[in-house]
Length: 134
Image (cartoon, rainbow, N blue to C red; front, top):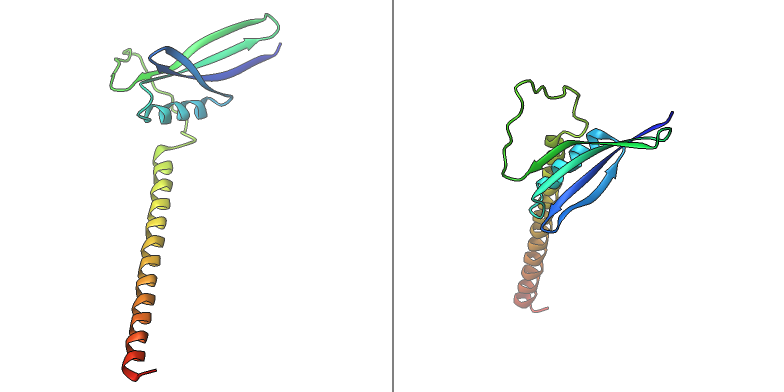
């Protein structure tokens, strides 16, 4: 008996729900879904867990994530979030992006400073040549 599990990410548009991507890893699919929800183009995202049993040729679909931007849903009283470690923490991703933009900003400043110094030296050399008469 072989059982296959996949996680499908659906995005909602004005025409309805469309499949965005399919993943084998649950944590990665949930991470991608949260990332897509931050995009201004997406209004709602859901992740569907598909379990397929090739022996019985049956598929069981379960929605494991369903969020709409700006909508807060009440959770059941007995709700307990999973305590598994997050493989792709958001703060690490944001930290990496910030570090990249800081480095690019630093490079731009250095190019401008060095270019300004070179122009000042060229201008000073030309003034010197005019006064000396070379």
